[in-house]
Image (tube, rainbow, N blue to C red):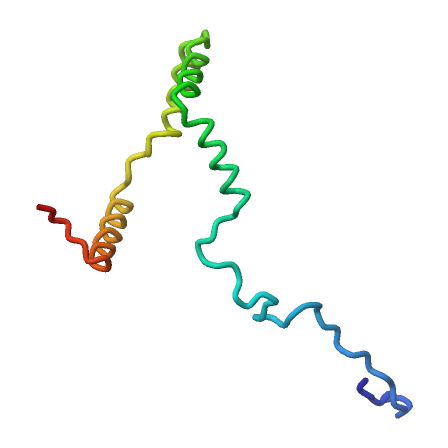
Length: 119
């Protein structure tokens, strides 16, 4: 404890120590190596894999289209089909995204030693 003096009586008074947050100091961690970059969340990966195995079968997809065909209102039926297609067909890239993809592809080809010319 640090001792300080009271200005009125000039008697020493005890000063409380500064409160410190629990845990390691800022910038430090209890797990210095951390989670490896690119590692998968195991549970999340397993759930996605199980859903994909179930959903990506011709029977399941045909069942969805059969269910949609049972919708009476043609506008709702069309909207459902459009939303379903959006899940499986990627949207077109805008100019910026296409340029970015081209740059990444060129860099990858340079780094990997691949040539775009195949004979």
